[in-house]
Length: 125
Picture 1 (cartoon, rainbow, N blue to C red):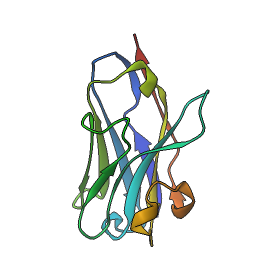
Picture 2 (tube, rainbow, N blue to C red):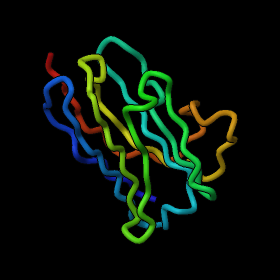
Picture 3 (cartoon, one colour):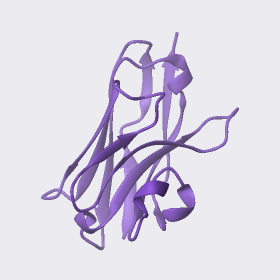
Picture 4 (cartoon, helix red, strand yellow):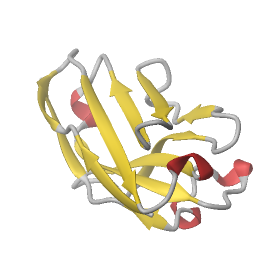
């Protein structure tokens, strides 16, 4: 499966952005899909994931209540709605697909076999 992330940009603190992760080659509904981010100062970190079969969603504590991950199987796309953005959310965001994730290890980027290129999100203060 090939992934294409888009939707990044520059936004003021408190604003919103919606990231898209479009898939081709395979049906994305058969994969658990996660969003990760990496800034200049930090290693890649888990942001959110949506489980392949049930659609259960899981978030990092730092984004819980502000970010929402959803999927549209008809469009073969996963979305990350980001609200109440903070300067510390500034990072390159990447989506990834996992064909056989272990639920207890959703945060582990090593589980994800397919990655899209990143999209830059910049939040100004």
